[in-house]
Length: 191
Image (tube, rainbow, N blue to C red):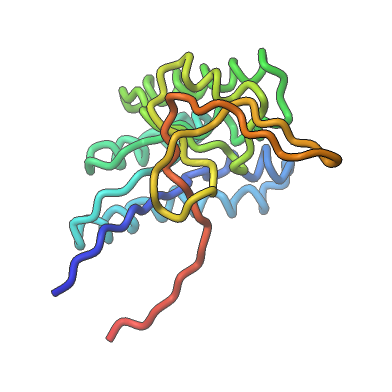
């Protein structure tokens, strides 16, 4: 039997994504985010059945809203990544607000599950000019928000110069590993 290595990650945004990313206060719409919490035991059972370790990107707001589910993830031996405070897009934040969001997420994940995440996944997979510096300052080992490779880790760059009327100038490599992400729906039949 051929064996494969597969890295599975789940974004456990729950209601935070609906409140912040979608920008709604509509209880019916927000209830769609509740399914994430409802599904966590099912996902964990499936991962356990096949002896699969996974990573879960969890906003701090979600950790406080669903502490039992976050502890279930931890207790099942899965990794918990930082995923913002309330699923905010860092590219919309100034440096002070982005720092506070990072701190709030760290505080919540530690308070609820006692974890200090090694990895970070940006909500919306966007970053600001400050994100990489903040991640290194706060001791993150890796990020999982970029898509420049398929599944090979690589070191991120900081300071790329993006110009519409000149060449793209690549910045300097930094000590932050990228675990590339791809959002794909893959279907196959079980035979």
